[in-house]
Length: 138
Image (cartoon, rainbow, N blue to C red; front, side, top):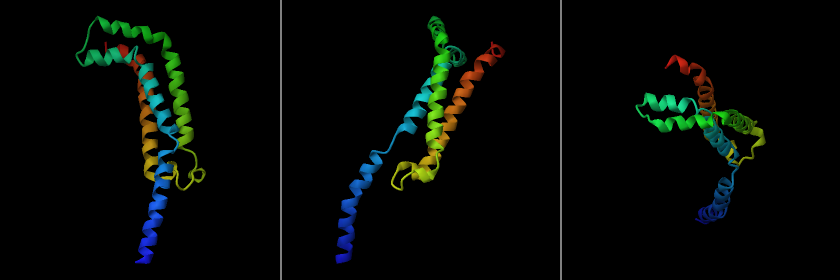
């Protein structure tokens, strides 16, 4: 009984520390992936978005306004590549650099970040490749 009470007290004392450590975990990977995804979407907003919207049956004169984003496409591509590069550097670092209580040491979370990394990379590849293939659809 005393042993159980000691374990319960120990859990109550260490649980907030574990939760606090997890809540203060670096979120740089998820922020970089989110920034890369948004930049990838903006990189294709001038060319891919009108094609997708017209294919979906949405149209109108307002679609021509998306062409105003075309001069900024290199900026968005650079931002997406930089964010993906940083995210890849953080995600694919050795597990030995992670402390045992850090979120990067959890295999399931690392797999999720790796999956997200490759999905954002695929999105960027589609956004960069589709404008050259777009004349085949018109």
